[in-house]
Image (cartoon, rainbow over all chains, first blue to last red; front, side):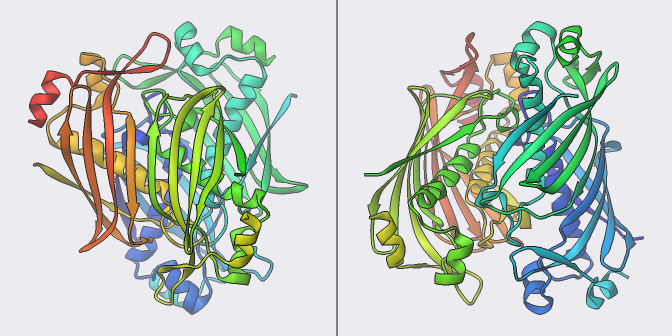
Length: 136
Length: 136
Length: 136
Length: 136
């Protein structure tokens, strides 16, 4: 199972008045790591996928996260991301956010590949074969 | 069981290139709704709690979220927040994000009341009696 | 000269470890107020403008901001926004962020109406007559 | 004059429905680059400065920014930051955000060193001698 690492540096502005990372920022970084994983597998950026396959992104359907240790500015965090399941229209990614050897938080995500609907909404599409091949 | 509603208006900048709310923003709003709930129950703001009780906030320990419908700019969302469990050191909040009668996403959170540790980290503290009384 | 007021409530997560609003959040709110101004003048949302006129938004070209008083969570801020100049392809907006009678910060912006270019970039377009009429 | 470079990678979630960087994010990165500059000069992080000198950060007083080229996800941006003036209580930083050889935006900032006031607000303090020496 392939694992890709995305590194971030926590900045002052990522932290709240308690002096620790304000938790929505973890989801910001995890979203970046989710997409970084695809790029590292050779999947083109969404703007190209939109032109060729009509895929506009991989919206989140379900997530479960556990926060184990606080982080603060100056910390370097490494997000270990892997694809643990590839279904017909959805996939599961697992992310572990590490500071050195310590687990900071971890998160499991179910996402779908999506296209635009005529009414402005979005709809899930089957995982495109080209992407399936890149991830296999 | 008390339920408090926090209303937000989705802005252009809350949306991503797919034209829908970028999901970390939902956690931003849920965090605001979590704290709004306490204020509505008569719990003072954290800055005051820090002076009187050493409580610096309610960091997240665990969250589970499901995304049902996409939202976009121009939408008015109402977050229905309730406290579903109050334990010794932690509590559970449930949030339903509605657009009119449609569920957009929902989320369950486990949080703790926390104080600063000498080493710069944070530690959970028993739910202060004054807060327990306000929530009862 | 028309002035429109956009109200925001400062949240805990909008503040940094110094306990005051982290300044990029002011630009987030000013961007929302800029667009709120157009909606209040009867200009349709950008998603509709994109379909009818090819206008995808009003990117910022130039801004100048002065920060006078700090703000913190719990504060209610009122952003007074006006259009001070409407040129051929650009316009100037002025924003004053008030907390009660106190000025918190103020900002002047030059923006353009933009369309997508074939190469993925954006280009300024003359202010559409329909918008010019709505603003007049 | 010392110049320090801070590198960032633009992510999908940094972009708005027009597909380009939502401008408040530039200020987020510039704030990080401003602080990165001090760290590179040997100035300790604010949390340490707060303990030793009572300095809680460098709030922004005045900024002027010009946006020249749009950026989008996938872009690598390099922020060239320098200190152009060091006054009694304030200082001026200049930031140029480059994508390869192209200027994306640039910004000049006036900031002060600040301490907490008893009433919860903040106040400017003279530039501490230790910092002045590090920057000299």
